[in-house]
Image: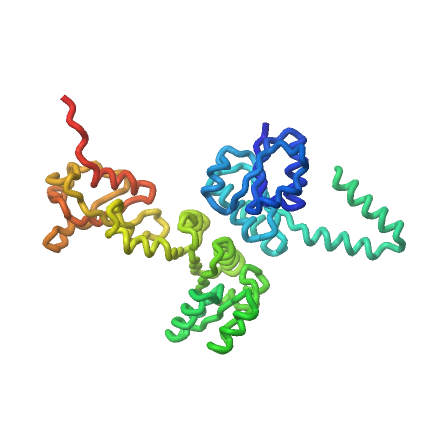
Length: 152
Length: 226
């Protein structure tokens, strides 16, 4: 069973944690605000930890060293890349992914060996396609296409 | 030199002031607009309002021609990223980060920030000799090699009291470089130099070996077995 740590229990972190946990991953989700865990469904059977993911002691305590995957998905780009680099370079986690909103920083850290995703460019492009649609119906169809793409 | 100071808090502000007085070209990048105005009011046109982790901001700040960046905000993640962006995208030759949480010193070094400065560690280094439980004081780090220079005062009950240096089993890559006797005279030790209680020993060691070095120089003799 693959062990994954997700840092940041916002909508994205919680959705990812829920999905992975249903697929059988052993999930630990980390957030410094205890109220963030409301985004998790009641049947979530992973571990919730309140703590700061850029704190090496917190990461050590939750056993990051033996984990297979580390994902950082907080709202802060800097926190995300710092935690991801600690996971990769200090604890040797094999797969490390970070969400980075700033496209330039995203590209830079990708070149430095992190798996990074930049949600802003993708979303801007999608919004553009939606407003360019001739009718509301066409816009709905385009959204359905996006969802179908994601299902793949 | 052209020096970019990232963060216009107390540390950044006073650093910038000193550097200007020393005739360096200085630019402070400050995220908070009200704080930027305050700095501009006091020091003139040497402050830029913006997020210094953004490559576009650093570009506008002329990071490409800067000699050094000092990232001194109160947030370690910001300081790390500012240094990394400055190095990776703008080839800034020297990156210096303030460390707020001393645990991050090690991490920043691994992630290739040139110089790290931690107020907590600095204050600890000053008071350590006066704290009864700390006998090993870290004096400085040698850049790049992972080596550091430490100071140890030989306690009365240490196993090395009365022993020549050649008999001491030091950890890997550690060496005793200076011995200062209680008379205050420094000497570079040879293998024959005998250590006494109260001697101050300056040694070079690997950071990881600090504990073993402490043990080697300060632990009481092992119990005799018959």
